[in-house]
Image (cartoon, rainbow, N blue to C red; front, side, top):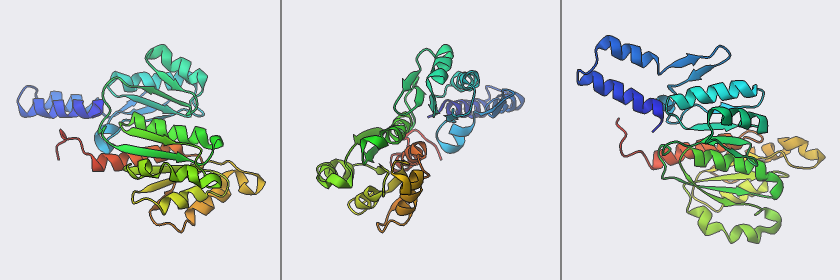
Length: 259
């Protein structure tokens, strides 16, 4: 579970057992809400509400601001995931968290200081070609950071469909499938027609001129004839990894959770 959820339960238990007063419990609960850093409001209660701590979208933020947000999240016991991060952002985060790891291909930063919540799911990330690798890796790193096993099946596009079919048994074993493709986006429909699991399709933005930087792929995926295919925005590997992790959380709930 996230650090804020653990803290929330501890406050409630202490109040119920008479170890703290109502005023002290109220004061402690306020610390689990937003923390105003001046340039950002850090949402410490998100794990208790949504199951996963706040994730930092790094693009457009100053490195020192990213580091300050990371420090605030880590101080409350949360693991850290920052997406769309460059090397400067990583160096800034590493100055406050030396154990930070930079996933260059995914452009993600992670800090894992305790077992992620609901860590029993299995996600398959399937990509069409090597040019789709950055988006696929963002999806994979996100799903892993949120506590799931990830099986990567890369460069298995429809131009050589035998490559996909040779991986089909492993893909079918997953709880959720993420498909990343560019060009005409056909891979999502093919996979959707071969598995009985939810498929989350992500247009990578890769393609020649008429692809319109992923717009043609997006429209093709939205018009998929395969049932069970849901489509994310262009390049949104993070969104696919997050929603796949949410599916896994429902299938493999935390045995220690309380209603």
